[in-house]
Length: 285
Ligand code: FAD
Image (cartoon, rainbow, N blue to C red; front, side):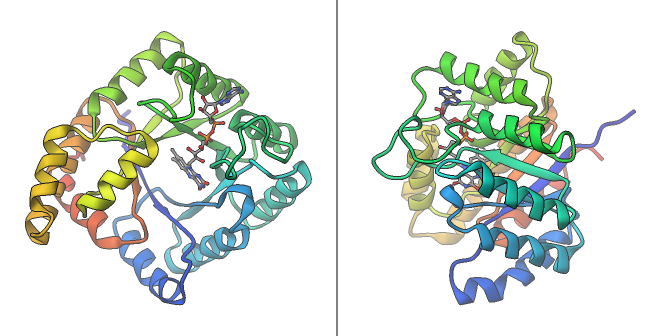
């Protein structure tokens, strides 16, 4: 049996009236290439709880593609999370991306208010309260989560999420392909068999790429950083270069066993669709 790679597109709840107005068209364009699902981010502490739900409904109305909410737990209570899970179940949601979320300022995971401290607590809670009603995806960090004490400790914490019942993982964005393969080797040695989908961020700007990489601790290879810096005033040339870097990354991943790709679209259809078009040439049918 041939297993086809799975592709998903991540959106965030728009925060401006223009963003809200634009979103249905973005969803419509992205839905045209028939992704497996759209996922929708969720502010830490439930700060855009309603935004996630509204965006989910927009996806369902404008695409007919499966809509998957992210659910963050830090700063929240069991009662609030239970209410959200019930709401999602009533709306026909079958899959959830379960996350801790970023910590409120001046707190640590253990001192943050609320009844959940780590994503594994949330995965356990979903399994306890809803059994297998939801497929659960969790985050993975091939280059280590920035707050982790060591790569080994971070990997042990990833394993806790898998043992708590995660079905699959989506990685943090990365541009260093070896980090993903190293992570997969560690999974294999640890007997972890769930699919781990690489998180792909199209490159459309020097400043934004550097900011994202610095923010999440992803390695931006020196030669890529230097080329982007040099091209930052020539938008077309920068887009072409970014496209070729990310296309090569995706091709290498898919040819070497990645089960699919999760695209961080930042609510823009064009960069992801340009990448998609280039990849269609080389992605196995
Ligand atoms: P965890 O898996 O809980 O890990 C957080 C840190 O705690 C790590 O350093 C880990 O090593 C450590 N740790 C984990 N478990 C334990 C334990 N039991 N004991 C001790 N230490 C532990 N953020 C949002 O706010 N909204 C979103 O919608 C969102 N979507 C995302 C989607 C993807 C695919 C990814 C990769 C990230 C996303 N994030 C989102 C960012 C994420 O919330 C942050 O990276 C957050 O800091 C960690 O979340 P986590 O679920 O990975 O946490």
